[in-house]
Length: 244
Length: 316
Image (tube, helix red, strand yellow):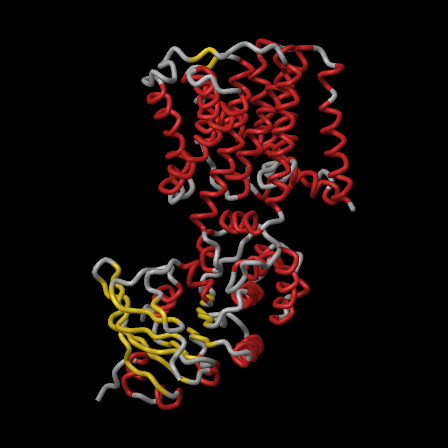
């Protein structure tokens, strides 16, 4: 089966510093790929390059077997790439419901959707993430965990085929992390492929089908979670070299 | 239900306004024409400034292009007024699209500054065009018909407001609001931000130009400095923001109210009128920075605390 997303030799420089250098990987249909690595490894940069908010210096992106490197963020969104932001970006002045309705109104295959229907779908997604009781509140009145849920609902309302989740669990309690993990599984079961960046190790280990480890912008390991996490290079990247 | 009542009231008010020329004095009708045109300009600014959140200082250029388009069509080509209006509007829309593509890439203050320069540039260009009468200006044929101009202005205001009403429930309007609230987030949920912003700019240009055309034919004289007057742009912003940017009726009510206050002050305390007017604006900004629309929404719940809250939350 051909993968949903193919990343070939992706490279991005920030003023001479290679934030991402020569990374290649695939995301299969219905797969959850975990992207991990120490701070500053280039994880968020990879997500931004895929969603189009950053343009690469080199490399090729194929989504649904067509090149998307030249497309702007909104075109990629309409093709079916949804993302959340690590630093949450709700539409602060809009109600929680309307925040999600924007996603439903403009996401994949939304050309003929009216506002009323978009709000109806938004209500569904709010229920899905457990935020329906906050529907009429302004988005900037939400606390941290609820903002994370809103970010997720907004992205889901776009009906993406590929969902890029940038640290949706950071700062959540253990119970909340378990909720979100269950949520992400349900999303995957509906046929969505997911690329997830996370620091909560036990969560990403149980969630991911495969793990990809970045360090200083380079791919240092890829494969089954257990296998990858016992790789000496990965241990070294996280904990430093063992003294002999 | 409440919404319906508001619209009923607005419709009744519009009909009452339509009757003003039958009963009002000529002075009142003249005041009415200039106020209705100002309200139209405030409402047009609301589309780009209130919905999309791009504080444009280029709307007086659209107004000026509407004036000159109409005047040139009538004087140089001998076309009727209606065709002149269409030419002026077309000029402004083309200008908005052409200038909007590069300028709407700028955000916040940079956009404001870039549009601020447009008026000066237009004055310099038009002052050197023979077809536009250089810096002497153009004199249009005289038409005594204040009632016609009044009803035309009212009709334009209603049309502009209905457009904003449609906008507020449409995909386009929602996209613009999303851009205002967070442009990057809007792009990644699939809003074609560039196209939407240019569209809002063009809509604002269309209605501003029509107002300019009507005003030119009514006043019968235009010159570069008055047609591209930047203080007119400041007026529309004050009126729209006073009324409530991003709301449907706010800019109209703000314009009617402020114009009336200003006119009243000018006749009652003529010498210090602008001082009092400035004072009112300052008070309004301190106590109701989100405009009349927000007062109407939240005052019933909060009562007088509303004003205190505003002062506190905005650290004034």
